[in-house]
Length: 371
Image (cartoon, rainbow, N blue to C red; front, side):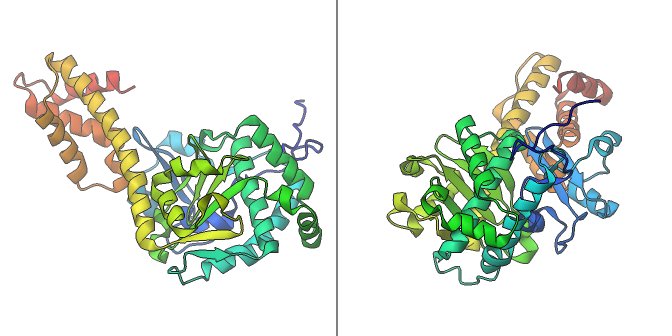
């Protein structure tokens, strides 16, 4: 019998807990659920990679019609077989550490996040939390960065020393009761806030919440978590001045305009981003992904054309292909999928061909090089 692994947080008890959340459900539920649904089993989630949709996940209560609307087709047998909730992980924590995190999450949900959701004045640039709330919220953000790194969520990883330091802080300050948690935090204010956090809350109409992003990444100067309406950046000790170089798809420009002097940003401030700026940030994120996808598509098409005709396609031909992909009446998520891209390749090559090579021949050629 295989020996049970130890809890990644306390490193003492067996990791016996199934379904531990990497990111708290109360923060990401409006982003991952069907529009207007806040209960579990209504999740609608997928990634967008260089070949279109990948890793689709749909909760058990999501109707087939919604799946077809989102990804433009039914799930394949393979996708059904391997489907797993990307926001939970089994046998990562022990039951006690899971319970302690639950105490922290409940406090932040009832106090900090409720305050953010009910805050309607986004003309005000910042929302300052009380000392008690800011300490608890900082610890919750530390827990998200640590959990994402320890589980390698989307391939995300902190520097090993930072991951271990955050784990140590969590193990030290988390408590079985709310009173114990707040007491432990009040006794170590400087140590809790040793890392600089930049937190932004994005104003989002209810009908548009599912268009926000969930993503974890490391750039040259900061660790970034995009969690629906909440975006958080973590800077290592002494590196807050690097924020001048950290674009984060335009969000840092908003932050720098909101709080001065920016390098002395207090962890008690949450920056409020209005809907217009949120849409600009999402557009920057989307355009970045689309540019990567388009580069991959153009590379594959050039390779395919050279294989079939012995010559590379011209600029105008590439423009026609990209316009075809952009204007076809298909769902957004299906637009850059392998199936749709290969179909567009076949149409383009058939129009181009004066050898009248059958469509099946083109698809066979494309399938040979699709990887």
